[in-house]
Length: 304
Image (cartoon, rainbow, N blue to C red; front, side, top):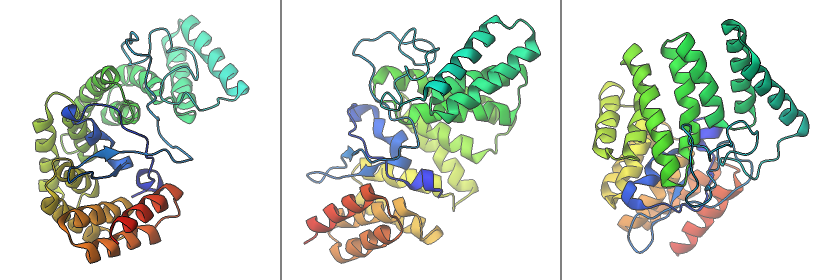
């Protein structure tokens, strides 16, 4: 996995487990079982690479992109990165592009501005705003890659949404856009995997599991699909099954940091303390992430 996907961004999850909300966060969290149950938890670490999902004000009205109403055109105002400081020069540049986009009448010129806005928003990790402008480009020039670029941007925002309103809004957008990707190419496994994760966090989790199984039927060594099926087993307290999944994952890629950590958690839950200790130590050896180190040390302390 890349550095981004294997880094452990661990923020406290505050949404209902009944919605299986943790499932779509799985590439970026640590599962911390409590009292014998799979309890999804996260703790903040530095250097975030994705939307952090701070909650909007309770009861805040959301627009069609999952923003608090009126926030879309304000760099830094959307809820993903409220703590992130946007440099004045960047803010001024984006505000200028927004004004230009609103005023531009020539279609091709307007698309060029939309492309610039998408890139700028992505650079400051306002992924839902980036998704909006990537979607404008895809609507003008539809195709597998264009739709996937828009879908992936929305998925970034969706991955750390921590209100049910934003989950529903952004999850529906992911389902819509990944559906367009798969219409162009039903064999796009990354799109199918992300679509499955969006379904698992919504009202049709069974469809999400079906999609992940379809991915594994085509590509049995697909790390992302194995990983999320493993954490699905963790979340449902099927720890023996989780051990099997994470053992499979670490055979495919012994340097998968998340896989090694989760293998340790699952083994510890089954009572295999020595094997769990080895998995935790392996995970620790593969990363210098202080958040991971702290989590490993915490788990090792519990094994004593």
